[in-house]
Amino acid sequence: MKHETLDPSVCSAHGGSVDGQRIKVALYHKDAVTASDYHQHDHEQFIYVLEGKLRARVGEEERVVGPGVVIHIPPEIMHSTGAEGDQGAVYFVSRDLESGQKTTCGDGH
Image (cartoon, rainbow, N blue to C red; front, top):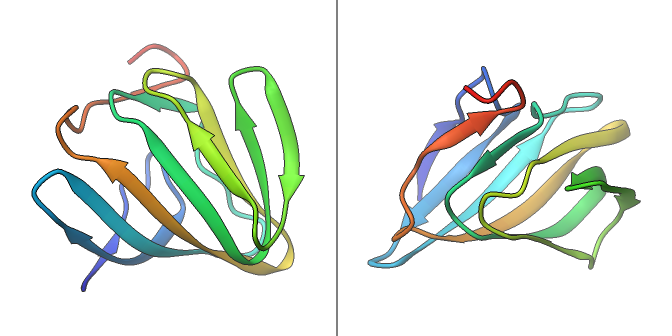
């Protein structure tokens, strides 16, 4: 598993990932009181919370979720996630690689 720090202009997570032929899986940690910018990307994504709590905004829906919850992010839907509380959060991510890597931030760029 390769260690990576995601683009800090969009995401506040760090961890490791493995790319398959069509799917990327990753185990990420988001430090306490950090959050990603509101953004969208071409690929579909699933987030499975392992530890801590995440505040997830997907489209117009926002909620705080904890361990055992799966967050589904459809392609091209604006979203953000942030760690709630002082423990941070650990989560597993799965996404398709065939849709590309393009990310668009909340201002449309």
